[in-house]
Image (tube, rainbow, N blue to C red; front, side):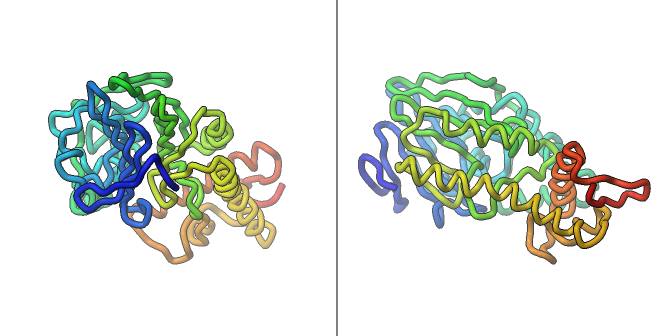
Amino acid sequence: MTGNHRGSTNGMDHLQFGRVSVFLGERNGKYPDGNQVLIKGTDTLAALDTPISSNSIGPLFDATELVVLGHAHEDHMAGLHRLPDAQVHVHQADLPAARSWEGMAAAFGLSEACAIQQMLKRLQDEFFYAPRPDALGYEDGASWDLGGSSIHAVHLPGHTAGHTVLLVEPEGVAFIGDIDLSSFGPYYGDASSNLVDFRRSLQRLPQIPARTWVTSHHRGVYTDRQRFLEDLQAFTAKIDERERRLLGWLQERPLNLAQMVEKRLLYPTGFTGTWVTAAEARTLLQHLDELQHGGQVQRDDQGFYHLG
């Protein structure tokens, strides 16, 4: 949790790793906040994502010339309204979500007009949401030379189709975004999410040659590789824990999708929100698809799932 040194800018604590500054959001960036990474190259000042905390940094953040988004979600775009002249880059698969609200709503999987409007108002009120129609797409392996430091894109999808880890060299700082190592576990409940991809990405993450790992939320900064790997293992294990819970339900009795949604696989029982029902359904269906493919679960003609 320590950098080359610790400092404060405009009242915000930050850790310094060479040219890389990590500004810690409230409670280590616990959602809805996030942790802000800034890289002060000799040629370019760059930001990796722009969480709510970016709005409190002041002139240093406001001078940002380049923003590289690890993915396009509202809590990672909350400071873009302060940077109208900065170039914004996002992985090609998340580009529609960054460029327009219609693209974002589609990526979320929102379809009902009422839900779409409710979510838009929430994002505008709580996250200063503003789309960036000028955003540019990048691909896996893209890099940006800032002068003295560079950013390298490692596409690790699953959370979103375009979710990307951003590695800053020579500092060896990996911004791992919403592979946030939280106790909640991986989130793959959007229309653009993919459980199979997420599993692969979690296996690939330790192969990235980093010395420091920065999460968007909850955990903050890791400089101890062993602790990072332990927390990554616990985070990954949440997927199998969910699978076991689902199989436990079906061991008791056959259930249809609506009944399983009510039981809540992701969120606490009774938890509500504009997105919750759809996110639960998409999460469940991905697990059910895997289990059906493996012969552990079958679906009958009435739409009930039972053990195979």
